[in-house]
Image (tube, rainbow, N blue to C red; front, side, top):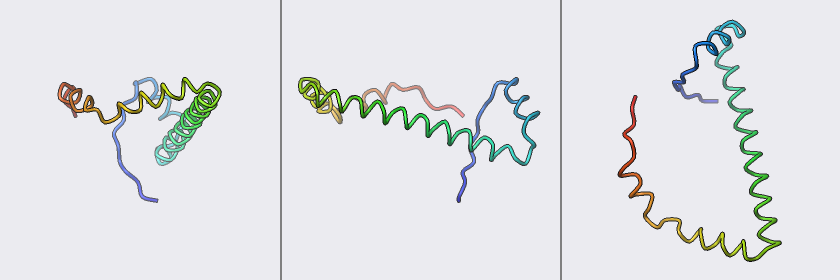
Length: 91
């Protein structure tokens, strides 16, 4: 499995607890597993929400039509305009 190096910042107290609880050579694996589990839970929550929305759209066609109306605005150019005023990325 390939890896990618990223920089994260932790509050000092959290970093100290991580260092105390997890040996130095095991921290990458530890953090990777925590992140993978958190992302999986997040994706599960989103899937449940999407299923609930789909169920509600089938139950109430008016909501389904409203969703389609909103989806028609995707690609309307607002993202480009918003991006022009976005804060510059900092390192």
